[in-house]
Image 1 (cartoon, protein in one colour):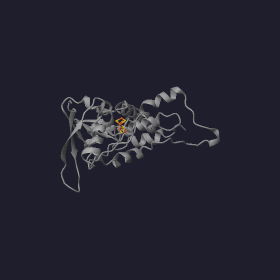
Image 2: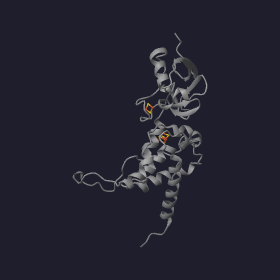
Image 3: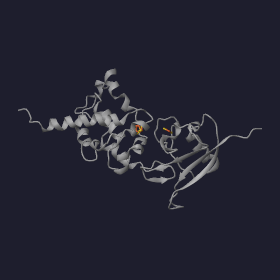
Image 4: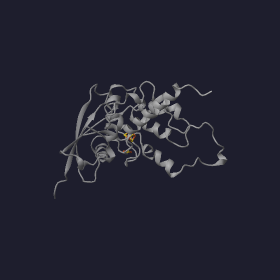
Length: 247
Ligand code: SF4
Ligand code: FES
């Protein structure tokens, strides 16, 4: 009987209660064409090493929780097929722009804080009575926010962003893209409020338009473009605020 084909999975580990420094563990995992990196990690967890820690939930590119560096590139492990690997081993490492808690699990508070800061909910000047029904949109109004609505908060764009690497206070790609979505939403009245936040210190002006955020985004959100559009909107908003008020 032919022996089962295997692939070596090399994982960067960090177990603070055992060792101060990170180290690497290697595992031989049975290989099949339809396996993704997350399947390999789950195989390791179930069969080889129960101490390996990593996040995941949906296994289908929706929850955004399985992000890691696969062979040095920021990816969703549930969407990275083993067969895409060029060599006979695959390197899996945690996102490096976030503090590692254990193995592939990183601290996400810094990102959640940014999300909260841009108020990612509908802001209304006046709420209409519930009895009046939903706030309806036309297909054209919906199209304006469709692309940025696809964000799954996976943080891969922050891993690809050199500005965020230098300055963790930078608002960053996803928070900006989600802001753009809110600003363009026909049901929302919070544009000025958000633009004030986005054009303040550590806001969109810090983006140097490298564009890697859009390259790595698994949902084609194009946060780099959203940031440039916000810069234009923010500039207009600032100029308007400087003009003399009509009497
Ligand atoms: S913009 Fe793209 S890469 Fe960034 S968090 Fe959203 S889905 Fe992930
Ligand atoms: S497990 Fe949900 S996006 Fe990968």
